[in-house]
Length: 482
Ligand code: GAP
Image (cartoon, rainbow, N blue to C red):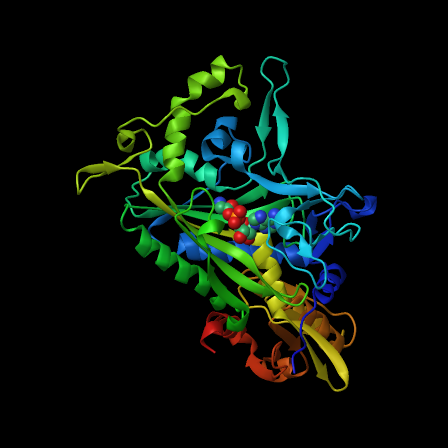
């Protein structure tokens, strides 16, 4: 029977096999920042590419974007992040540790509503109910741009990639032939000075987001919301996440972000604590909020200069009465009408989904009295698709195996290994999540066949060397159909 995965097992496998390391480890590490090693960077790249393939490559109605991390400060004034993107925190009066109010847990045997702190326990020193009044804590990192005193300004590291899309809505409209409904997709780094970081790469201060802003006509938004909700759930399932570990959870009214009409989380059952459902991705109906806000921001630019480029002094002006005809509006040629589109936003975390794929793929099983650790990755995600071994280092087998590996490498990530017993080489590839191992033995010279060993079943098959590439491609492409 498959073992229940513990986060510690994943963390140790990640370090041992070069998936994920603590950032700046040689200097004692930097909290909540992580580096992806040789296998991890391939895995994460595959997650990114799988997202891009399904969201951009396979669709006629979505285009891509790669906007800059640093943006004009007014972007964050208009979007609401400069004023509202904060978590409420408290400080423990005993140990001074700061915690997010909504992350505080009740002391054992006690309970109270979320806004009554008398039963809450400090995660730093376990003191109960001894906190300061809640205060807002801004989540955006600040940095400075410019070398001269008169042109230096404070910028923010973007806390979401979405605003880069809204700021380029007009550019994309004017430079392509997109027509509503259409989407703009982007993958990139975001930064948040999170108060509580959590469980390995789950909540970090630097992370990668994969976001789609899908623009549609007001009134069709409910249809698209439902459609994206289903599509995004299925994306994880089609890449191998077990159905029992994934669910959709609609937000309650009081959970909704200031811009959202509706929001649903795709949640994964992560192995933290007793096994918690946690957000993997959010799908939100952002209405026409952002484009309207940016129109207000554009109208407020004179203040930005007049008030010495001090964002705290800028007050966004009211909307123009005919805002729906503003610079970020859309003209529907067929209906001959102009409007500000509504937006459905599926917003995923590349690091968070990489962690979910790792956790879900992890397995341990007993084989001949020994534990076999393996990662049952979908081939699209596996860092290495095939490993090629000579059975022994003689009789021309290494040369043949190297040739095979060389020709497979033109098509996908492939690894050649001739060190140690073949059983040990299989185990190493199991731990890396490699779906196929190919062994060249004496049969190759006799009849041109190699042995293909399957990671999940450990079954072995004899396959003609000439047919190997087609055979592996077929197996990978039909993976979902099993
Ligand atoms: N544009 C909407 C937006 O940013 P969000 O729910 O704050 O919404 C979307 O973030 C996704 O980004 C989350 O579901 C999660 O996967 C990822 N994410 C957010 N904060 C993160 C963090 N601190 N560390 C890792 N991933 C994070």
